[in-house]
Length: 188
Image 1 (cartoon, rainbow, N blue to C red):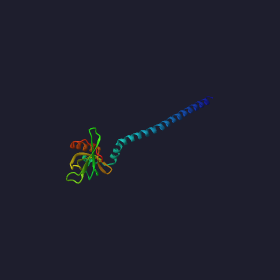
Image 2: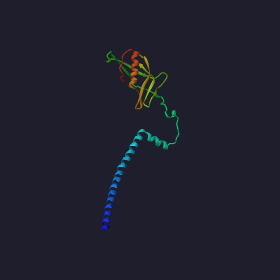
Image 3: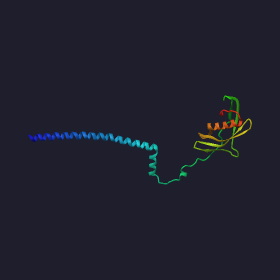
Image 4: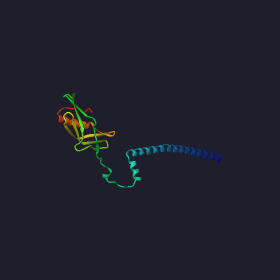
């Protein structure tokens, strides 16, 4: 009988070992199932952060492109001037204001003139779509007086360069000072 009891104890012991091993196997599989998505999610977040900051593109570019250094001056080319035939195709109207800033019935009509000895306006670009005109001239149609304005701001809208609201304010302020009357912004 002692042999039978020993066999039973061995069987119970092996059975308990197998149960523990099966339970440990479940925990290992569960740990793998949790760890793999976490590692993948961390890799995706790292990829997204590096892509957003541009570092990954820079690193990949460094790996694939030859190491040719370009001088700093060649990297950043200045924008050149642009020639523009006309900024305003119709007459420009400035309405006179009374002392309270209310428009009166008096309207001054102006026409755009090209710069002296030039067939086009030259826009000095600050960016691809903004710039300034160094010399802009207007002819008062009623009095034939010519007014010249410096550093008028312009903007590229569509395919045409036009004077910005700040540019019109610059022109209006200079006209008010020269004509000695308060003016509203132009009605084009």
